Image (tube, rainbow over all chains, first blue to last red; front, side, top):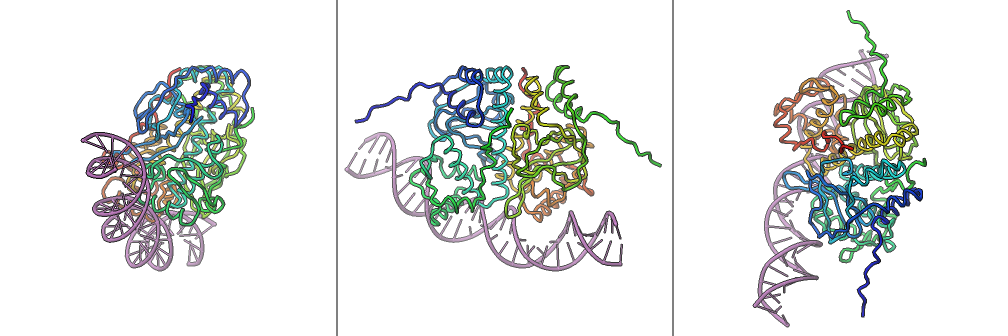
Length: 251
Length: 251
DNA sequence: CGGGTGCTTGATCTCTATCAACTGGTGTGG
DNA sequence: CCACACCAGTTGATAGAGATCAAGCACCCG
């Protein structure tokens, strides 16, 4: 018999603080200020937009659990997913300064996010330059990932980009301890994945089958297992330097 | 007979200040501090890298005149241009915090850039939160353009993306007064343009010819004239909202 | 004048999109 | 427990966009 164990009511901001401090340590004052940010927990059902293009959101959303993505839609209905975010990621931090959203944000599975008011974040960034730097750096890594994705869709074959995305997600998830060795959960439909890769769902399907046939990956339900990391990395040309694990410049 | 008129030796930082203030005004103190940043003018010959992937640059480069781009190269030699920059653009502002460059920077024509030390910029951002905000916002617009380019290469046809790029460049150049009505100078080879668009040079060539045949654009030497802005905009689905002309959130 | 560079054109081929049908799993309601 | 609907994934056939290869042309500059 199983007990319904509720997770301890930790401060969601602790997740984000941990992410920032994985890159570079913060002073006690900054730490406390970040943890003191008022936040409001909110459940988010799958495929329900939390932000739509054109909105003027008043909050940043910190992913507490689940899987969230940002995307743009064209008039003909086709969609490009711009990024994936999971626990500890601050989605739409840019909204603190950029008033009108130029893309949408939604979850792929039932998720939980913590809402933090832009004004609070801005005030904090202005008061504690150290925090301002950390947030700025966070958005710079965001941009670095965009650049790599641009190379992905612009210059890599379907096979290479699929392999590259899987490796990036595995790498980023391993940073937050969301992987189990070479396997990780990726609860995203092939249709959505193809929107992130800039290919058709059908072609992604064939590409995945090829990867499986070559014993480079396996997947049961929506768990991906990287069977041959070396060869997959070779195919993808994956180098995690763009994620800048070295952290920001020391003050 | 023509006089060789040398431009007055203005402070390069004034170019950047103007760009920032086009978005939102700064206090007198911030203005003076920005103009007081020590900078070193440097000529840059075409196709000579100012930053290469893996470098640890000590300076940001402010474009004074010319045309500069950022790019990534894959092992197979193919290249993706990530952005174009012209007078007043601060290239690699992100380098202030991101230590190791994850992409290269070079000029397409002989250009002039002003070098500003990262440390100086960081110190200023920490001392004057208003400046910190303005710089942060600048990098956020950078990221917004990356996202739009991702949509371009991921989800638009060769025709649409070519039209979109031309319209974006025209729009951005008009902001700095570098356009002459519907025409502007674009001293970029078709090979380089195709690297920005994620298509082959040959296919870009045909696409341009189609645009010319349909009387949507004209081009003499390396000046582009947008003949039919309305229809071109329609084809591209161009909406400049992602450039955020509305500026940052008011303090 | 020669040679480089960049643009243009044609032919061919390959990758990827599109369309359509079928399978298998899951959930729901009778 | 079955019938049904629904959705994600799979498969095949076909079309089209764009890549690649190769050659010719125009212009510039020393």
